[in-house]
Length: 86
Image (cartoon, rainbow, N blue to C red):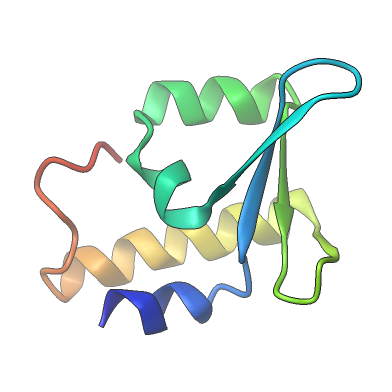
């Protein structure tokens, strides 16, 4: 099931920096629904932080590795939605 697979990443939420003091907090699934280009721009622009289930920050490289493995696993299991841009 996708929900269980998402929990394996240890990423509960993604915080997207909108300004110096404003963040939009979304689920990992919502982040993955964004286009690959938009996600890349957010990461390169240092506007994204990954948050674990305890509320702590996940290091960027660790989060990116986990997301990459998640996408690979979902594709292999045929669970990746065809309309989900990755």
